[in-house]
Length: 233
Image 1 (tube, rainbow, N blue to C red):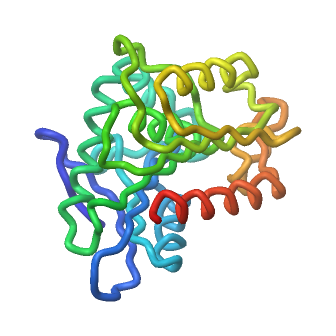
Image 2: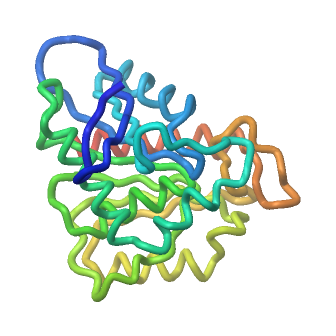
């Protein structure tokens, strides 16, 4: 576990590394609406095995966790309503990663799932030059509404289930327009017939548009790996 702060708020992330000496590229993992749980920790370990530092960040604060199988709107809602606060919390995690002796501060990327996908996009939207790549997996695309969008310096990869009811075709087009106008280097990969949470093996509520999709999971994993290699060149 790795504690860091956003102002007076203590956050508790999870860091995985192979322990080899030297500084390595770092991949931040932004959690879904329930908070930091096993899926994000496992992903951090996966990135460590690939030679990166995996850092599962904590957006809600130490000890604040929801229910992975329940409704976590009360946790996520305040951050959706105050995107400036969310941006500050996310950039605090970026700053924390840069302080670690095992991290190459010039090689940081962020990926995120569901709510975390929105978080990854919001890091890119911040205009930071500290984060080289941002990956949104079955994320939410709503713009932050914090005034005119400045230049996006972070490369952006969006991995999207075409049948995701939380990001409909018009939302996809809106994001493409937003990223184009911001001068971003962006990609959107849409997977036919895939729904929300297509990487989550336990997801099985197609009546709500939420379902695991093995093909989309495998394809998005391969795309993420290739993208990280590119941004860390």
